[in-house]
Length: 88
Image (cartoon, rainbow, N blue to C red; front, top):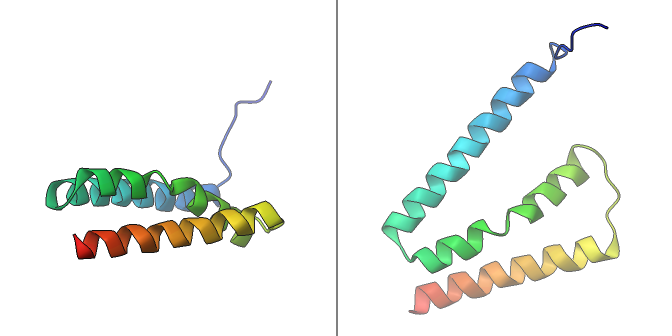
């Protein structure tokens, strides 16, 4: 049985993913310290939308009607949260 090895072209991609993950965590920490934790928590919970968008653009996944509805509702939710935070 051969040992499992990463293909060489995967390593730079993993580094980018790790850096983006660290940046996301740092942004959440800064948002939680600088603003309202409830808003930061709600916005950070929307990460599955980013996963869907990346799957569509990078992996060429099919965009279904439920994806479109979910992405549109997420955009509307972000706008409402941002509007409510600015007014409050």
